[in-house]
Length: 101
Image (cartoon, rainbow, N blue to C red; front, top):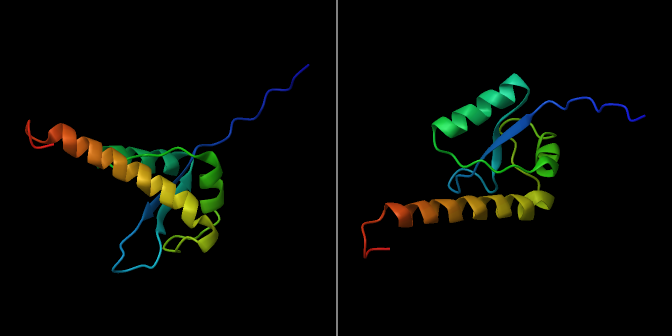
């Protein structure tokens, strides 16, 4: 008989990248359970894109708040930022007046 798996609490990590301040993206918020829900809710409220990647969250959760991501995670995080950029670009196209896309 299969044992039911324990429910895993939701986790969330928020990143920022300001090239004039940091040489790499940094963790600005992280949490589990209720804190994770609050981070996600705030992102939705502020229209900040959300990317779900459990493996990346697991790796980033080892970092402290305001800590820059290590070099070995650059590629994974770059993919997330590229995804966000493509969403923003697509949204800009949809909001542009006809003939100015």
